[in-house]
Length: 374
Image (cartoon, rainbow, N blue to C red):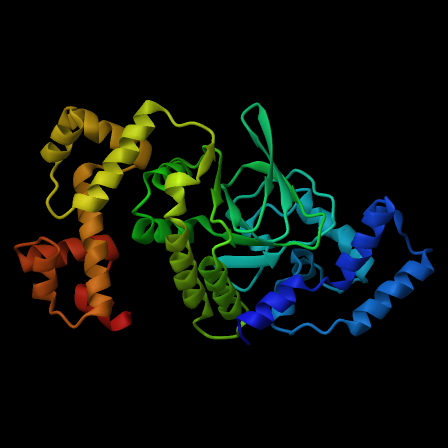
């Protein structure tokens, strides 16, 4: 399987979508066809016989097929899909029972959407065509049209709906909060805006709004997403970890677009902005930073800096510095042959024994045990 196979699969209308498209073009609603409409059902059955997608890729077509114990007819499946669109699929465990932390679904085209919300993070990416995305932020309802390369990042609890009434392709990438936190802590260090957004989601359990990015149809971004899909559908014992790796790389690729093209629907308080700035500063200067240097940089007292950080990020300056040093040590343990003593010095610890003690406290294991495991 290669990228061309993935793209061809994306573009091909499934039998259900062909039926929904005919209904849409005729001005009828998808629920208007019943058991008595033998001609329409016979047509769908013929389409199903002609439709031979790659069996691995076919696994990511529709959420409701993984929820139903018995496969229904195509038009019935289209009606059942409304369960997902109306928000009754709200918990992560209802998406899939495979134990993965990432789920990828090709959005069903020509199906009217309904407002819904869920407990996980969702990224909707437009590969081709266009889609209408509607969401509620506070008392305001927004409606935007997305084009190739556009994506929205939707936090838990956000009331939203999306519709694709053309042959375009939109992918929904659903990610558990805990997994996104790890990707955020390790990779999303270059964008204060994203730190602000996910800081609210991860540390406070609430959302600021929806992030909209315009990647301008960047083919490299689309290709890495196709690579993610290829590994997602494979039956590999480590496919979950591989998918997390590709998703992390993909997120890094979209970061440059956060500077000029990002739109954030929702606002942050001045205190939150300060907390975000402090985290961004620490991620760049954790090797040399101290509580006093942070206080001096932002022209606040050390007590005020720690209070703000504790309130919005659930941590303190020293705890965050230590966390960043230990995460860097983990990377060196995984990717180099440096000794524990050398790594201790690399991440700013003069005393190796103290480094090992702090590593064990943070990671619940010793550096050597961590290296052996990873």
